[in-house]
Length: 500
Image (cartoon, rainbow, N blue to C red; front, side):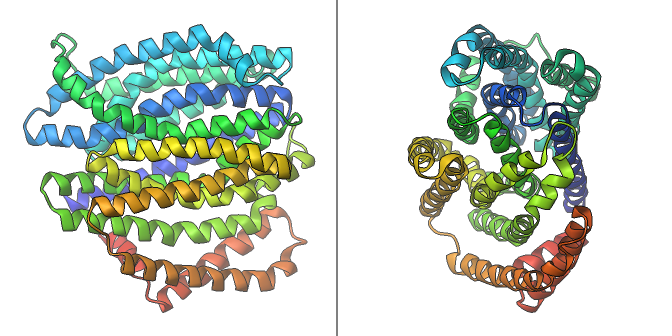
């Protein structure tokens, strides 16, 4: 079992890196064709509302379905539960898709009144195309969650890669002819191809049976858990929508800076946070199913410390290299040097949100495993209100820099509140162990940063790619040497699992 999980984890990690790299390539394609123009602003702003529903299904379904399926499987009802959730999700996704298509022409002008007439037109039709894709996203999400519950993490990632690659191909083939619509149509085609890929995998196993009657009692019980979980997942996207709304009131290009900076800065979270969170989730679910509370707590503690071990040096390294990274990735075609500077300026203030939201991935897994998703939803709802207030205040004093600053402060308070509640819920984690691990990791990162600070001026004249290499590679070596000397326990845990 451990061997299979280890192989699955490695495959998942590789697939996740490929997914995130392909996502960066997609952003590079958008930047090349549309730069920081109003067209880019309109597309990126239009994407946030449909993407809220997409995340509602994708991540929400994984967090709710994995423990419920594992529990049903223990009762020899796994296939039945899969069919009930899959068929009911089709109905819900069709309804949400229809509502999105109908109301797109109303909510876009309300949310983004400062867009010019053509920008609003682009945003409306992009939203409509993406909401049509929601129908297929609903079915995809259930099957991806099923793959995760069987520790076949890489399969769900491969299906997401199909969507991203289809979006890229759509832009490469048709961006010069139909503009931003090429991206939305590429995404729609990708969701269909992704669903067909999954059908090829599950149909030979005869897992899906469309003639089985729906049992509304079981469906209701599942969605009473799923809806709070899914809404909680959407909190991050709601906050991004808030950021985009405030950004739309500034000059053309700010919406683009906000979206590119956030995607780039959250790259480590997207890899390490999601990977560690996803891998430990089935372990936590099995521990709870077996009433192994000490094992459950240890899993949470290891998730928090291992994530901090990997994440903190990544964030510091990106802060040092941010202008070089943006120049290397985006500065070509319609994306100017001024756009690079604007994006870098925003990115620095988003780093706080990366750190805290990454740790939150582990905490939320704990809430979902013990089926207390409504608690994290309550805290998350308060964070949306706080983000709106802080955006309003900070943008008055700091301009558009106040948007990422508000996001970082909100993340700190949101995650801090969530951790306090969760710690009480499980009758206390080993806070002394976690704090000591965090202290040693932080000291190692400070020492690493000090060494880089000394020699960085001597390489500033080099091209961006060489600067990145001469900071990242020696920096990683220096960091792990200090971590080893300080005897950080999460490093031993990580290395032991890599050996296994």
